[in-house]
Image 1 (cartoon, rainbow, N blue to C red):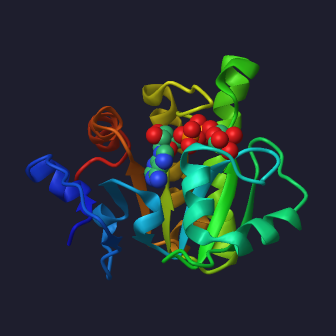
Image 2: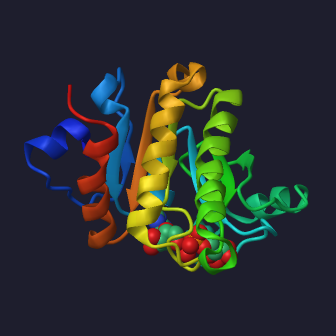
Length: 205
Ligand code: AR6
């Protein structure tokens, strides 16, 4: 498998770039969290999460890449949603993407909120996205690092929030309805951050 599980992290810690990635089947506990370095639009999951803005009408970064890869029909469906509040998420079909759904989550602009408020809003993006995944029976969900690009959230702080929120989701009653969460990172620095922090929230047995 080209996807790296926590078990792999403990083995060698080396993540290779791959053009496409697929979720492995029959995930066990340690395989619930996966890390992948590359382009999220190439991932075949049930749902990929988009780091969108309140308009839901596209932009740069991962949002631009997702809209380009999904095609015009994604934009047309997004127009019918009438935007989305920060900290919330809305779901669409995936159109030309390998994934069935796109969950459009709106992360906080780092400079616009108090420390406590922005962490709450970012956590809410992850939690709401996972609840939407459950409602649509999406069992394999891929997240980019929301808010850490244009929106300026420092990667270490944002990764703590992401991992803490996903961990509490897996510990909640709905947790068993999602098989895997794949964190998709672009840069080496982001990958190293996730490699370092994942074991804090998902320790080996
Ligand atoms: N696959 C995976 N990750 C990516 C990709 C990709 N194809 N492209 C970029 N990233 P950003 P934000 C990483 O700026 O901070 C947009 O204009 C990127 O390196 O995309 O939440 C929206 O419309 C970074 O680590 O999202 C909003 O206006 C991470 O994805 C605004 O930017 C998130 O960076 C949202 O800003």
